[in-house]
Image 1 (cartoon, helix red, strand yellow):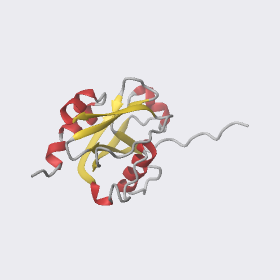
Image 2 (cartoon, rainbow, N blue to C red):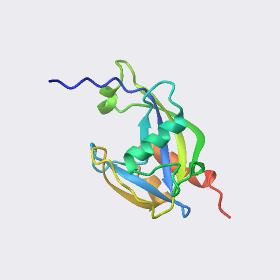
Image 3 (cartoon, helix red, strand yellow):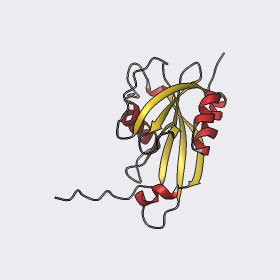
Image 4 (cartoon, rainbow, N blue to C red):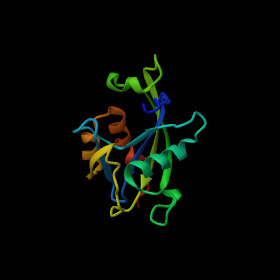
Length: 159
């Protein structure tokens, strides 16, 4: 029995910069591209899926962090109202409908305790690490991810 073909990905996604109050950033190493470090990313499952729900779903799937739990309240998730439009790497274009070459990415931030439990999705990521925000920006393989991390101090309130 052949598995059902996957529907093409929707070229609209979220990027969630997960960070601690100390401004350490959580990065994940891609399973399909070892050495490529990134924040949580993921595409809409339906055209009308609200971006905040995409962010919550992807964070839960990729890290096991449940937004809206006692440890991580819903208020910890913030839409930074930054949008990136970028060309999809050719190696990943087969996931999209024929002719789709660009993706629109919406940036969110998520502040979590540094000791939050992380449970990676093994098919997606090999390992994780916490890095100070400037080091995290340098470690990101994606220029839009690096730029989002560099915006972190702008979107956080510290006294």
